Image (cartoon, rainbow, N blue to C red; front, side, top):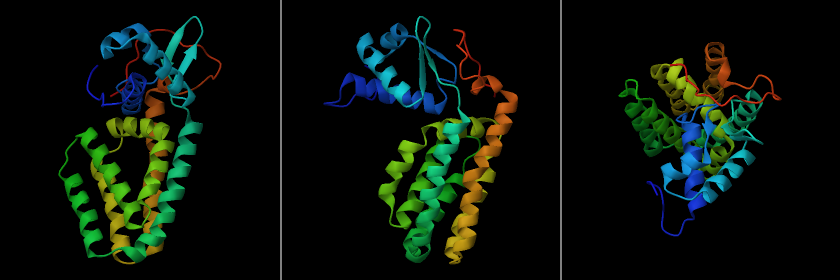
Length: 238
């Protein structure tokens, strides 16, 4: 099996993790066909863990299974994206109320250090995404709610798919870093209202990005829920 197989982990767990990551990252784009045989050969496993993983991913609305036609990566559903964004915003903004009181020199320095690493990036989308996750996780930790990141992570798969598309097409990294900086500056000034407004604006900006992506690549989004896909290759707009 390819990288990722850990001691004591089932083949299904490893396959599910790898396919989920590839769907969220956009490596397997919305609408892409998923062949059990091809995936099993690629991952060096039998068809059983692949089939079981696809069922689990279908339960997460990341895959659609059509009888007599096959499995496909789900297209982006704006209702699921909006639900995920609602959960994320509720948790992260609420945490700021504690963060503004708990912020000390060490925590502020850690936030500034992540921002500095983000500013050094040019157009490395994958590295920015990783640092973006680190930044938001750290914000929760400053508020004393690091454990809530698990809830955010589990809720935001559909949001992350949309964010990846936005980062690749319409959101300059410098703009996002400036939004992060505004949150930290407000926290450092002890201005909770400004910090909340900056974070809400940052988290909601994804919707503007998504609309621009949808205008350019409508085939990546749900349009007719009853429509059956056509088994063909899918090209992501870049």
